[in-house]
Length: 131
Image (cartoon, rainbow, N blue to C red; front, side, top):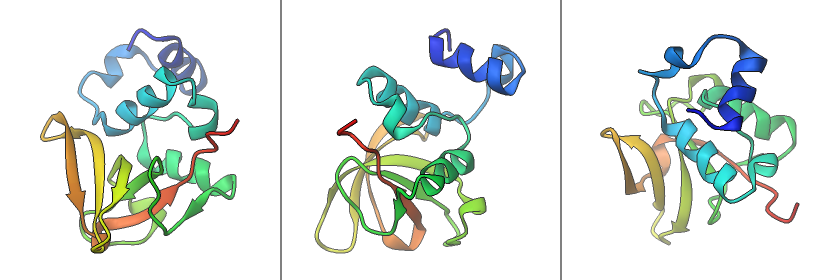
């Protein structure tokens, strides 16, 4: 949490680094990927999944179709409400059987590749990788 992005987030939102010590880090992982690949500006960056999804929605980059590289937002009880998002990952591929393969942080406190069913997916954010 000592990156320039962390300092920028703290300046914007207030608080201190210690406040993030026990936070769920799934979206921090996705944001970190974007930062490492110099795509932070086109894929957003947030520690809170709901706010990150709304960032995509406000830019008309929100939808319901899986695409490799899309950011996928989940609700474990099946809600499709953006305010109920609980987890986030990145789509690796559409498996062609209704499921998707993802890479996720903070899945059993680790980075993992998972196969997810559509019943848990709230929606997708589509980064503009061309920018």
